[in-house]
Image (cartoon, rainbow, N blue to C red; front, side):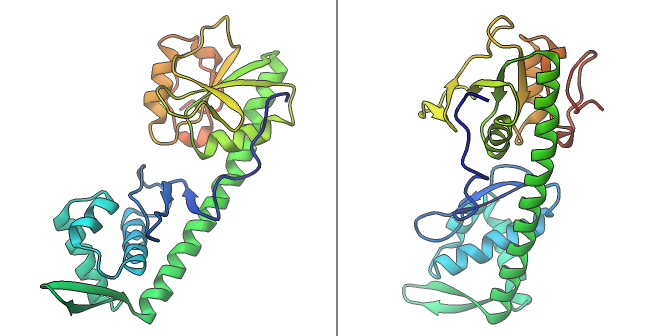
Length: 247
């Protein structure tokens, strides 16, 4: 591959990356809301992990801020908080100005460590599977003589596939993600419009958050047989579609 490639699996030191999406740390030390739905780590465990990290980062955080950071309704955030208190994971104390302070108990720290370990384990499982399927898709491009390939969607899969592409005689020419302040990702230029069939030989779907919608959008203006998808995204493919995602 002659295009620039990523230096590794993105952001393990600063964020958790997994099949359920990306959870990034804020400057204040707690986690922002996640962006995708769960598949491996169940939704309850994900929200619990987020909540424990929020409390650890800011003992005086309000329940409304918790809800905003978790991306859930205030009432649901309150329910999760009460459940953590009942389980002995979080302790509540009265604070000045009719506020409350929240603290992780030793059991809460232990549970947070366990859930984090599960998260990281799944992250590396995703990494291994994505490397394997990415290599398969890139090999298909190479075998078919498709030398100019675009990636659709930005995220962990984009980084992983860019890393894998250096092992094949394939040029990654751009990343299609629509409007974005950045000019490039992993050394690849960002474009907003789907390239024409004359500009690129194939497009690989890398969008974890909305894989089916992304696939359908690409196929609306690009030959479906030249649109490739990782099998684990579970995309329903059109007749004649390429790649491993056919169901």
